Image 1: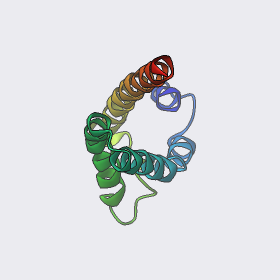
Image 2: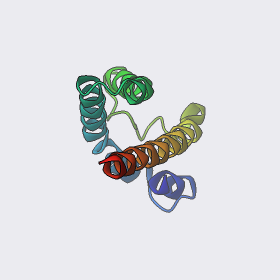
Image 3: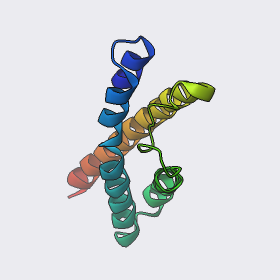
Length: 116
């Protein structure tokens, strides 16, 4: 979010912004897929079903990068067609999702420890 807002205010150029953001796309996809599979294996159905759409969206977004683009975030297209606003909106939604998941996991941890 901070990197995208820096780009929006012209504090950094599009190329450096996109290279910073693109280096975290693959670890995000892998990490979220691993967490989703672990929730499925451990039979936490609600958390699995909550994570499944986000993991699917991350994989879809990574697969659908047009050939010739630098990555999910492309410096030549980030200012075109409102992509900067949509990337910012997506980042805010992900932040809210991860905060929700953090507090759900924390609640589950505390409730498991308290029940023992």
